[in-house]
Image (cartoon, rainbow, N blue to C red; front, side, top):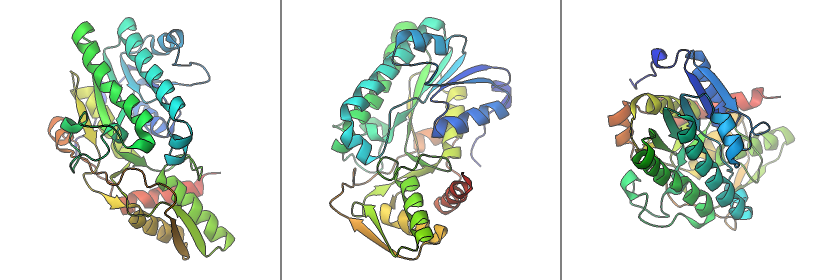
Length: 314
């Protein structure tokens, strides 16, 4: 069985979660509260982390910081907003690291992304290959900004002794992710499209790309467990892949989602829309060795929970 966080490491501990109202952040905040931490989610309406003063105010008093805040979206959003993705994510990273150092944060977990990898590294993606090429074009501005977290982690450790690590998360899914058909990630977009098509009695749904691209899909609860273990165990700059170590084609995922939703019509692939990166599968051996962590929720079960949770939303 995969390792579990130690409640004794979190009880009454002051913890800040940037992006705490986002998809991943909400699950992490809830789990920290269950473990007894004194957890404070950072809300964008209260703190604009793109400014040093707000970043400092948000992090003041924290012993542990999880940096999840990001401007992020699906392929459509990436193609329309490359400058925003580069600008905002670089500012978020720079200010969080600097203010974490200034206010005396003991541990910083800065979450990177599979989008930081080069466009076509050897499979499975190894942490050693993160710098061996430019990211896939459709998500390069975001990917470069998330790659910068690795440099910041090393630099602030060497100059100031700031303890930080950078888990590299694969594509996440689960209940509660935003599901805009043009801007969301693949799983929530598919759930929404098939649900609406079933409700309307439609016999055909258009889906982005060819369906041949593959993704390593990780259920959000498994990701949260890895982040907590990283904060407990990793005491120096280290990139850690967090994924399942498996890959599924988007077409396979779509067929499972359609079945779980109860949609029985045709899935029409729109090959004029981009697929994004052709293949994604992470080498997760480092996370297993260092954290004792591995993914536990299988794709079928995770998608079932996602569909059930989405159906329960108002």
